[in-house]
Amino acid sequence: SYELTQPPSVSVSPGQTASITCSGDNLGHKYACWYQQRPGQSPVLVIYQDNKRPSGIPERFSGSNSGNTATLTISGTQAMDEADYYCQAWDSSTYYVFGTGTKVTVL
Amino acid sequence: EVQLVESGGGLVQPGGSLRLSCAASGFTFSNYEMNWVRQAPGKGLEWVSYISSGGSTVYYAGSVKGRFTISRGNAKNSLYLQMNSLRAEDTAVYYCARMKDTTLTAGFGGFDYWGQGTQVTVSS
Picture 1 (cartoon, helix red, strand yellow):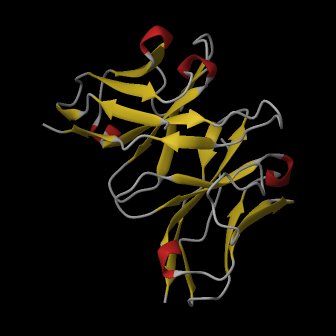
Picture 2 (picture 1 turned 90 degrees about the vertical axis):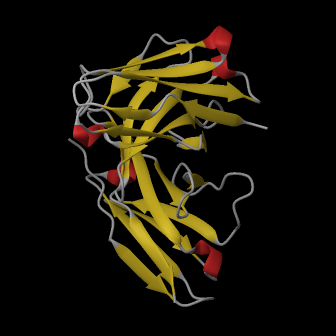
């Protein structure tokens, strides 16, 4: 089965850049997307097809995907960005698999 | 405004059944692929099942295959999940989620709208 692995936690100071990685076999050959989930809320799509932002998502959210790793970057991190983040990709064996999730803490 | 509203959750004994519903509004439901995703207490997101826009193609996660059945009623703008032989490990918040339309760009585009979720608890 296909698996996506993320670091459990990432800490960042306000105004700095946070990078969250998502690792999977040949992930760069698939489309990756990213979700933000604040406590007690439903997930929100923040990046799709590696690097596209849905309408209403701030420009400080960006994405890339190459090799075995997709990366979500939050530039100029704000306190409101503190949340759990999940990557996701499609695989022919496991279908719509989610990553393990990363808790972003803004210190 | 796109809205997805789940219902049907509750407390059920191990081995029991539940049927979840998701009422969709604010978009042409019959044009969109749909999914169920769950999240166990304190855990991450787990994709559960997919159904194509017309209902002819369905996929399931290995953990629920043979026990859960996804369906849809396009005339009623509704998505369903029939859950049988429930186990303690099925305890979770269940979300319905719309697949993003990527007709112009092609390829998987993620789930662009989610409901608020419905709690399913399997316990004796």
